[in-house]
Image (cartoon, rainbow, N blue to C red):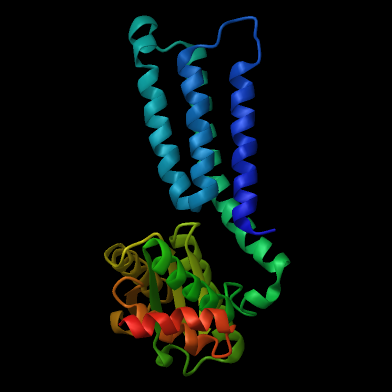
Length: 275
């Protein structure tokens, strides 16, 4: 099962649960703040499923703030009773669990499904996507831009060979895996990361203009540099956007998988002719 289908399924299930919790008859009427609280819980859940831990954390914080605001009138009227304090605390903990813990869990599920669906799409050592997947993703992004003008950007993050020069193979693999895990946790769940070999990681950022990708690439580059204790120049990032650098994106795709299916090659050929 692809993660996109899994995401749609769990969001639909979450919507059904929230709707049922509001519509099921009760002995006492459901208060409006609690209805809003349930809706906010669903939105946090959907953000965690779509954007992962980072998006879920932002949604959880926003939901907590909105929910507390809905309780301000009751607080002003009755004060902070034990029952109200317990209700607010329960909501805040729920948002945190769903947004942060749930987002982390969804991130792990995404790569687990990729591993189950076909390990040929994952790099053996880093367990992020491999060259073949990256090539196909880039070609598909070019096709989407040609048809619908959908923005897409990539960032090529490169580690200096000097960082690996004196390391044994086992230590090299451990270092690369830790970098891959860090990058995976520092990008949105809708984004992808692949390993191209020779210390090069590819961040694939759908629905992202080049300017936004440059900001994300700088943040990730700084995080990786701090993680491995490297000098600033030892970790570099090159950003490409399909709108501005279509030919370069296609050349990168070809270099990763020269024997790609003819249909995908035609997409890049068309781009080269327009450049």
